[in-house]
Image 1 (cartoon, rainbow, N blue to C red):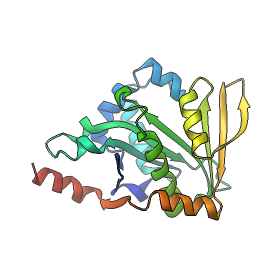
Image 2: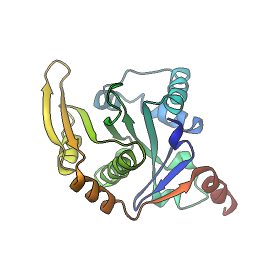
Image 3: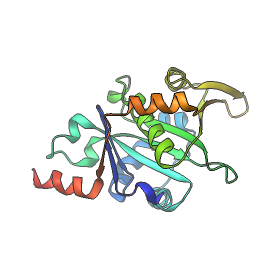
Length: 208
């Protein structure tokens, strides 16, 4: 999605940046993990296929993706951005007849960064972005039944269980964005800073 191609979102623990070509090798490395393939219901791709996927995520109007960076590492300008990567967060506009419905996905690929509130913060930031910039009014999350950590996180974020599909072994959780949800989201992300991504990258290099 072009709307976020130069958007950086800085939170308390994480920084969200657009999925760029330079991120693909590390992302490809992650997705060679059988554990992550299972948790994300993904098939292994070649590096060329992963590069093509990155381009489609950048160009397609129905996909919005941010790479999640660990802010503590990223704050050190001498550390390459790719070394700060810990996961990704995505919005898919899955229904062509309803552009206000979004499927939400979150992956914390680096085990050392799990269980520290990073996934929760990145999800909050992405939801706020979806509501304010994309006009999302309803979120869905489809999660493998074996991924109880992710299910529990979404339930803590007030998502409700909508259905269970035994065939695909996944549960669908939903949240409708009414005025109280919108207010809570905006309050929870009030300290998030939106920056120009290319300018921030340039500033990081200049400070090394």
